[in-house]
Image (cartoon, rainbow, N blue to C red):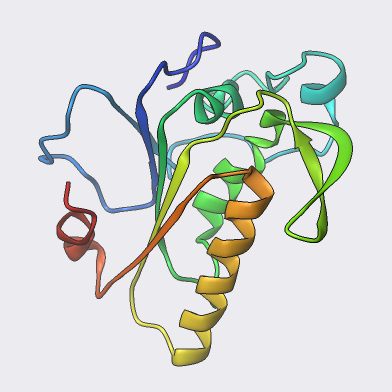
Length: 172
């Protein structure tokens, strides 16, 4: 799991896949299994006020916000759930709110939190599983909104038929 010193210039893969075991990934990839046991965000704002940049909950997602901010690319591989992320991937994203500050600015014409680290990774989102056209459009809007909210300079949006095609679609 990510450490406080961040991930350097790594690629972070947050996924809910049955397992990327067997994937031969480069050494500079940090894999976060969103299905692993971790608490959901408590909404306590401790990562903003008590322990800036670090979640107060001491588990595998404690330093995820800083790790994301210091990575070169964030890859989210998620089952498409009604046009959004799976509950597991959403929980990991919620726990990474420490990459922002409790102050606001306008980005993309909308109000967003200011970024704590003044840098953000490229964002790749890969949704998999069956989805309607409406769910696909919703997933596209969700990914674009996450790009703006996280301050990511770019977005690559991919779709895969099922979890077994994700590696191929990602080019990993």
